[in-house]
Image 1 (spheres, rainbow, N blue to C red):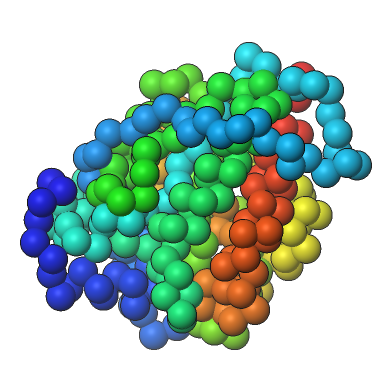
Image 2: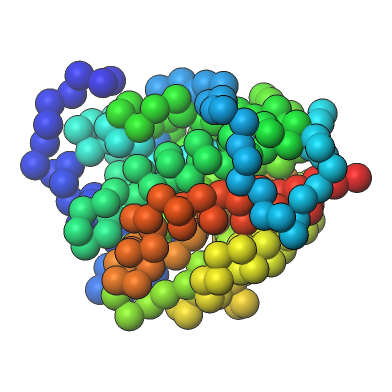
Length: 283
Ligand SMILES: [Zn+2]
């Protein structure tokens, strides 16, 4: 799966709005097919880092407030997806439809890929959560592999019996659009139904913390006050644990792209996400 030849087609995914966006000019069906996605590389346990010290002074919680809690972080897409179009375009059943196993994700206009952004933010988030006592798992172990499929990304959260799961993304919409949004599941008459309510609470906690911590506005083009509910994402439909997506902003917007390229801002994002997760998870 990792040895597929490079294809000219592969580059398309980086050009077409790929992530969570209602980009004008891209047919809705095409966007849906490209939105969330990943083949079968297996996932892994979390990246440990040297313990995070990135806690804002005004948020300093107890030493290990997340002890005993399990969080699964799903860094959207993967850096190797573009070279494996057959693998990532394979259709998988997400209960409400069939979708591509994974997608390449979007990128900034200067070529900073969403997959690299989600990987970096996720590693930072893992470090912070671990420093607060949580057990953390990531759904992929590098940014050079392929996938995993969206079905497996959901299964990793389920198998881990995660107390909360978050899929990290950034959008690729038209340049004038900006802001972040959180995506939560809807009831579909399927496995996610029992955790729709908990996912909504998780989503609101993360929405509030994200806005406070990053200063980014609510999305100007999707959802209501930074909240959106969907039934077409495999990563949500197949989850049996509370789960959300964060679309951290619009990578095609120059101002947000500049922020996303800045490691200090990515740390702010990670701290904000950790605070939102912690707010939801606190006893
Ligand atoms: Zn994405």
